[in-house]
Each structure stands twice: as structure tokens, then as C-alpha cells.
Image (cartoon, rainbow, N blue to C red; front, side, top):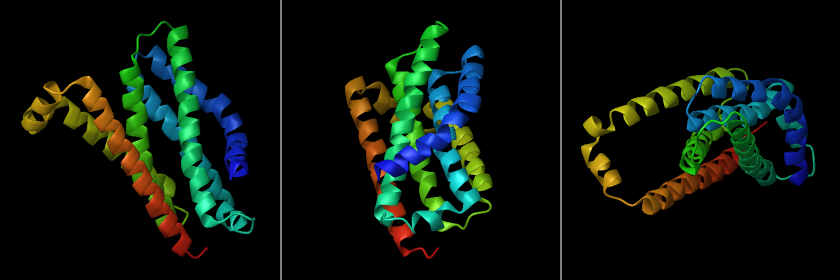
Length: 202
């Protein structure tokens, strides 16, 4: 399974240097929110790996190798967490280098949003056949980003009870609750993708 993660990392190396770093620099120079930078940049890496798989029909090759389908899915989900941590580290270094203010809460919020988004979209790659997945993912991301921004900006008006709860709850409880929701959603997505992929005929 480690070799599968390593394979994706090798594929991502050129992509990281030619696109991820310039994108990160662009967002930093334009004073984008640190959470948004982490979210957007993190999304590029795992979905670029899916793009390679879709383009080269890698699923057929992977299933001819001595890996179970559970291991293939596990490598994707674990690899995504590893890539996200690398992006977080890179983003923090660039923010410090450009003297841009950020907090750990900003980084945690962006990482959490990315993992939720990944959890919601990963099973889609194992439900639909290759071809139009890139368009589907982009549409989902746009809906996710726009609706999330609207909810955050209007949470006082739309969800007054939730807003009051957030204001009256300590940061520690909020962080722990948010982490629990993110981890649970990601694990459920992992289980769902495993079940779907095991039943799928290639």
C-alpha cells in the first residue's frame, strides 16, 4: 500500500512545482484568506491523481497488481491526508516568508473543509465511469464553495440558534466537535468508497 502512495507522490512532483507553488503564491500575493489557500491548494493534489488514473485507465492496471481493493482505497484516503499535510506545511512556510498573518485556527479550518469536500466527492469517482468526472468535481466544488460562503456570511440571520451556540461555546469544545465531525465524515466516506469499489466491475 505504501508503494501506491509513493507512486502518486512521484506523479505529483512535477505538478507540485509547476502549478501548486505558483497558485499558492498567487493567493498569498492577493491577500486571500489562509483557510481558502489551504482548501484550494489541497484540492488540486488528490484530484490530479484521479485525473491521471482516469486518463490512463489505471484502475485496470492496479487491479492486476497484488493489491486488494481495500488497499487501493486505503492508499487513496491515507495519501490524501499526507498530501494535505505537505500542502499545509508549504502554505505556512510561504505565508511566513511573505510576512502574511495567519493562525492555527485558519489552517485547521481550511484543512477541515478540504477533508469534508474530499469525503463528499471521493465516492463519486467509484460510482460513475471515467469521462466526465472532472466536470462533476468542479461543479460540486463551486456549489460547495459558494454555498459555504453564503452560510458563513449570513449565519446570524439563517441560523440564529447555531450562531448563539457558537458564540456561547468555548473554542476548545468547538475545535474538538469540528474535528470529530470531519474525522467521522472522512471515515464514513472511506467505508462507502471501499464498499462501492469492491462491488464495481472494471
